[in-house]
Image (cartoon, rainbow, N blue to C red):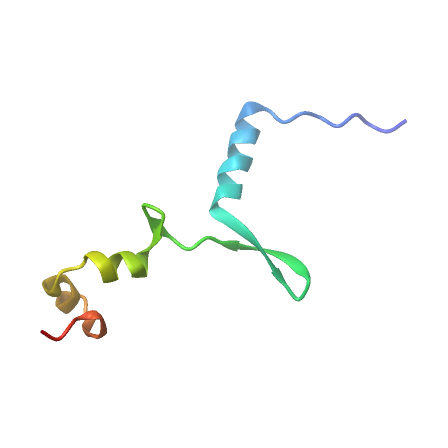
Length: 71
């Protein structure tokens, strides 16, 4: 007779949920792969957020000259 499957504790459920939120599942060559999610700020990717909200001084200090607009 097979063993009964044990239920997860609340702590194990929380750890599992936190880990699943860090990764996203994609398909590569017909197989599922888990990759880390790219970091976001308020749901917007960091590159887009910087492009929209950064001032010229910040861009110059961080050597992001390609994002600076010519006035």
